[in-house]
Structure formats: structure tokens, C-alpha cells
Length: 140
Image (cartoon, helix red, strand yellow):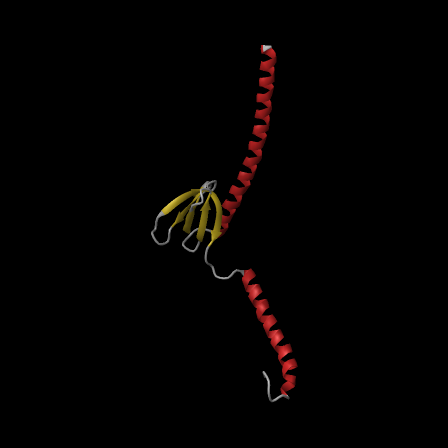
């Protein structure tokens, strides 16, 4: 009886351990990819007072400032107003967003398309409504 109970318990422990390790490895791979994305984003933004960022940490803390240093495992965010610095590990950051910089290229394209659309509408619709200027009354 004791041997049977021991064998069942040992089998259960081995199964739990096997599935538990498999799940841990998959999660680690996802974490590694997320860390690599954060590191790449920080490197793309660069270092210096023009590298203004907003960093969101896993504990929902938000930091605003500029990247004053970027190392292999961490980067330093300096608050522009107070001068306080905080070193953030790439593993602790859940997101990095570049601040400022004006309009992006996508926004400029949308704005240009809207202006062109308005100009084309003005050129086509106004003569059609005004009948070439023959009316003396009306919106023209």
C-alpha cells in the first residue's frame, strides 16, 4: 500500500515539475523579447537632453525626463525640472515613449492630404455652385 501511494505521489510531482518548467521557459522567452524591444527603443531615442521620454514601469509608476545614460542592462532617466536621476533596469520597464518632437511624418501626411482635399473641393465645387459668376445673388 505504501509503495503504491509513494509511486502515485512521485508521478504527480514529476508531472507538475515538467509542466511547470515548460511554462517558465515560454514566459522567459516572452520577457526576453520585451526587454530587447525596450532596449532597442531606448537606443533609437538616444542619450542627451533632447532624448525626452516617458517611461512606464511594471508597478504602474511613470517617469518623465530625458535619457542621460544607457548601459547594457539599464538606462538612466533624469528629470529635467528637478535634476533627479533614476536608473531603470530594462526588465523593470514595461514601455518607453518618446516625448515632444512635434508632428510625426504620419501626421504631416494626413495634414497634407486634408489640405489638398480642401483645395480640390474648393476649385471644383465653387465654380459649380457659382455658375461661373453669372449670378448676382447667392453665396458667391
